[in-house]
Image 1 (cartoon, one colour):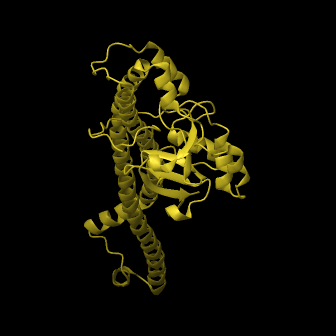
Image 2: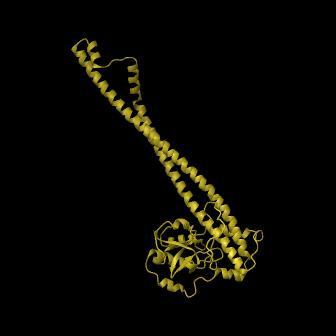
Image 3: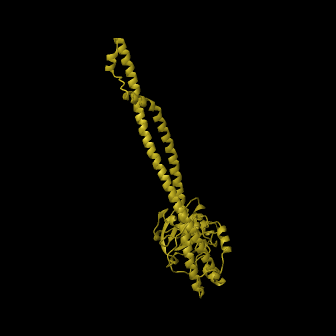
Length: 358
């Protein structure tokens, strides 16, 4: 957020459209180079304070869209992973179904013969053997043969019944996994379309911010950028006051990026957006945090404001559209907004929404 801007949320509704979050610093810098500087229909601010405030409003909108874009990309990645999981399950279930059907086919001839024999009136019980036998030995031979046939038939029929049941279950499972895969694919397509709309929206907002920045004078740009640390805050003192811990290690890494420019979608090492700075800082100590500010606001362990420790991730605004790293003394290290380098400043300049410890 801008160091001179007290207002917290733009009165206009934030436009919500979406895309792939792969905006690199180089691509965006190239895009800025070709944006027209005089095509904006916005009224030209009448003074420096108004100009900086207007830039802050535009930058705030773009940051909200930027973080929503990151969040949509996370949703898309999750849906694609779920789709892949369901497709693999469907392939496995098809294999189980094929094996079950092969087992049914193995016993089908026996069942078919039994059905045909019954239909044709064949009699294969012991009473029939007694009636048609010419001698005791023949009776014994026929009864023994009938027992063998009956046992074999009974076994085959039992296995056929079990195989048929397994085939029905496999068919149901296969259909369910296919339906789940199709549903996940449909959801992924919907999110992908939303991502495209968000990217288009962000590109338009970036153009607005860039034009507003180009209107500022050198002194206004210097006023916007401010100082890298609050008055009276010595970075060496911040470092000396750190206690061992993963959060303090992330803060120490992040402090080395003070002065780096803000670029939408950038995750370092030379430029950052707000969540990108948090991701990069924690990655230096071997921890992978979610890419969006909203997802970062959901992870880790909740921490109350009076229990904050250097290195905790601090969330700002009700929509969790801005994040930074607590630097102690009520200050936060963050990639503020376009035109403002990575810096440490008071948290009171933004709307505090919570904190997480990773």
